[in-house]
Image (cartoon, rainbow, N blue to C red):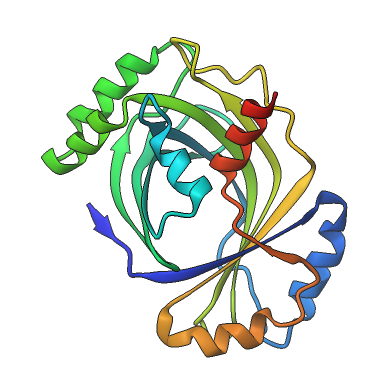
Length: 226
């Protein structure tokens, strides 16, 4: 189990067609952003209550909320490593608790069987969270590039090629019927409270609009509207 420190997460969204301009803005920034490691594809399976309580908390902007997801990397299924993440938020600060696992969703394995495999690898307090969120609601996938400022105080991620797959009505993971999402990109700045002023200077001038974007909430809202 790993705990991350509390941090601010400031998100911006824009049209996917603005990717070249955004990457140029990052490269030319006076903060000297660099890439600490290569890009990778991020996958997340979101667990929720049958009444979609976590989604509701996000949509109403609850000051204290929690989200449970299984995260793994890559577009192939050669690697079994994943992480169960409990994302917690209070007012504008967020942090997470992570549990390394050795299981990923596969089309030949039912969600029920996967959830049993996950629970078997978790400590007691994490198993309670799994039991409280029994519905596998959605899987999303996107390509992520990573950056860190020259002084190491601010992290930046750039997400593109956003996809989502509804999982509510299938026994097994399905990745062949993507939700029709708009062509967007998401830029997120992450920094600790003591570096807030430094981050504000770096964020100033970004040619995007600030957003409360939640990839989970956005995809679920599109499905509800459809």
